[in-house]
Structure formats: structure tokens, C-alpha cells
Amino acid sequence: MTIEKLSLKEKIGYGFGDAASSMFWKLFSMYLMFFYTDIFGISAVVVGTMFLVTRIWDAAFDPFVGILADRTETKWGKFRPYLLWMMVPFGIIGIITFTTPDFGPTGKIIYAYITYSLMMMIYSMINVPYASLMGVMSADGKERTSLATFRFIFAFGGSLLVLAAAEPLVDIFSKMGGGAPNLQIGWQLAAVVFAIVAIIFFWFTFSWTRERIKPVTEKTSLKHDLKDLWVNRPWFILLGAGIASIFFNSIRDGAAIYYFKYYVQTQDAFQVNSLNLTITLSSLYFVLGQAANIVGVVLAKPVSDRMGKKGTFLSAMALATVFSIFFYFIDRNNATLIFVMQFLISLCAGITFPLIWSMYADAADYSEWKTKRRATGLIFSASSMSQKFGWTIGGALAGWLLGYYGFQANVAQTETAQNGIRMMLSFYPAIGTLMGVGFMLIYPLNEKMMEKISGELATWRSKRE
Image (tube, rainbow, N blue to C red; front, side, top):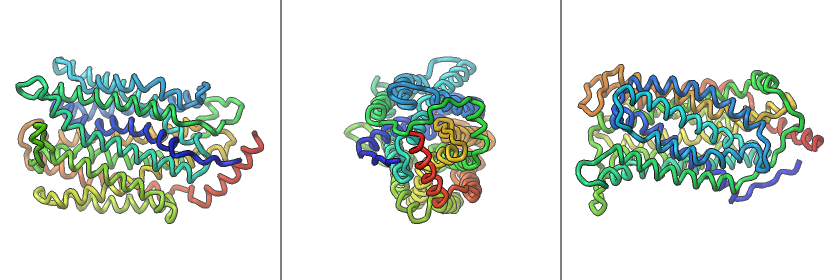
């Protein structure tokens, strides 16, 4: 089987897709709980419960999207069409999620449940096929790692755009009408900007990529696909590692803005007088974290080439555990050390992201090697499932912990509440990194095993053509 090298344009095109998804993913993970509690007026405990209820359903929805995509046949392939079909609904629902109608307490909760559930379903409909696309663009393991690297450089670039621009855009739009700032309008119009950019980015991904790996010609039943998945041990291990990794990130991300507003208690970093704009410490903290993520993504390939994917993932998660625990002991007035530790923790997280996505492709190859059937969409739905489950646990726990520690929006916090917020950026995330280490210790697909699988699959595929 001849391995076709991917062009730079195609790798960039693939990267644009995760830039689009990550803009809203980062809006949700960093700001959505804060938006619901401090802007829309829903209690933290209610938001945490909503995250649990809606995301469990949504995570279970992901494998069905993968099954549907595996059975889709169009002139554009199996997975690319979903980018075209779903990009506009993605943008529209994203705007509606950050819209605040003037409802009563019960109406607000119902509205949040409906809009957030729709957003997550649309996210699955575009993101599961997008993730699966990597598995059919190339059969070469190094090309896949390169694709994953491009993907996450662009993902963190999209996140960086949001984190650098979200609060300034809200600040600008909220002051447009004159008088007192209207933060509800500010958040809605900021979401409009990000929705338009996301739609454009998805279009580039659809236009600039190709599907090359063709599945075996015979149709397989859903029963066979699920049976194959059930015996794919690496898939389950990656699912666990992915959940642990996203839990680690989601609980840190969700608590960060509360950390600065209610614990550090000094938000303003500097003023841009010509634009009547305030740059906050939380914005700088978020931007630095995304920059460190990008550095980690760039380091992932050269480090994993020397240490292997498994060894690199293990080392990064172990270091993140140590750094996270240390974060708890930083004094609120030591902004320099807060930012240094944010950089180091985010660097470790950035290293793991492209590795685990590349390992999902390896798990798809393992399944095909073992069963002689390929279900790329179903295998890659593990990636979205792990995101949703990890985000479900982290997001729900964040809301519940805020309630448990006595948090009340827009008032001075008790010492107990401040300590709880500190724990949510330190000891609780460390639980996730330790779980990630545990799962990766038992992951069986090392480089030697994958060389054997790739070679035997190439021979088998060439006989099928």
C-alpha cells in the first residue's frame, strides 16, 4: 500500500476544523458556568446538575453519530459532508446559548437545558465526523501524528483567539448603547463574532481535505460493530485516559475566572484608554495557558519520537500532578508564580492532547487488524465521548463544589468558599492527572506493536484492492 504524503495546505485545512470547534469549546469550559451564574442568574448547584444531566445524554449520543457517519456514502466521502451540513446550525445554536431572554427563574433553567442540550448535540454531529476524518486521510502513523499536531496547534490557536478577545469584546459590546454596561448584550454579540469565524473555518476544512482510506466493501451490522468495539481493550483504556485528562482540564478551566474574581480579588491588569478597554488578569492567565498548550503540542511529536507516545503521556501527566498540587500553596499576591505554574501545567496538558488523538487512530487500526472490519467513526467517537464525560464530571463537580463551599455570585466570598476555589485549581485536577497515569500504565499499543499492526494491515489492504 503506497503511503501518500499530505500537503501543507491539507494539514492546515484539517487544523482549521478544530480551531472552529475549540473556540466554542473554550467559551463553554472557561466562561459558561460563570455566564450562567453571574450573567444569567442561575445558581451554581443548578448549573452543575444541568451539566451532568445534559452531558451524560450527549456523551451517549456520540457513538450513534459515529455509527451514522460510518454508514454515510456521498461523493465527498463519509465524514467531510457533516462539516458542510452542520457548520451553520453550529454557529446559530452557539449564539442562542449565549442569549439571555427575560424569563423567570424556572424559565431560565428550562431555556438553559434546551439550548445547551441542542448545542452539545450539534457539536457531536460535526466533531465526531471531524475527528474520524484523521483516520481516513492517511494510513501512516507519523502523518497522523503530524495531523494531530496541526490540529491541536490550530485548536489552541482558536482557543487563544477566544481567550484573548472574549472579555474585551464583551466589554466593548456591552458599552455600545451608552449608559450602564449591558453584559448580556455584550456576551451575545461576542458569540455572534465567534460563530461567524467558526463557520468560515469549517468551510476551509471541508474544502481542503480528502478521504483516502476506503473501508472494506461488505456492509457490517451494528451488532458486529459494537461487538468489535467491546473487545477493543485499547479503546476502553483511551476512553478512560481521555475522561481523566478532560476532567483535569475542565475543573481547572471552570474555576479559573472565579479564582481571580473572588480569591485574588484584583482583576484589572492594565487599561487601553484609547478603546476604553480593560485587560484583566484572568484574560492574561487564559492566554498564557493557551500559548503554553501550543508549545506543548509542538513538543509532542519530537518528544514522542524519542520516548514513545505512551511514555510521553505518562511523563506529562505525572509532572502535571506535581505542579497542580503545588499551585494550592501559592500566595494570592504572587502573580508571577501563579502565571509560571499556569504555563508549566498547561505545557504538560498540551503535550498529551495530540498524542491521545493519534492513539485513537492506532486503536482503529488495532480493531481492523484484529477483526478485518473497520469502523473508524465508531472508534473515534471515543474521543468525543471522553471529552463529554470528562467535561460532564468536571463541570458538574465544579458547580456542586461551589455550592458545597458556600459560593454566592457577585458578593464577597467566605474563607471557606475561597479555599474551595483554590482546591478546584490544584488538588481536584491532580486527581484527574493521577487517573490518566494509571490508565496509560496498562495501555498495550506501544511503537513496536503498532509497527507490526501497520505492516500486516498494509499487506492485507493491498490484497483487498
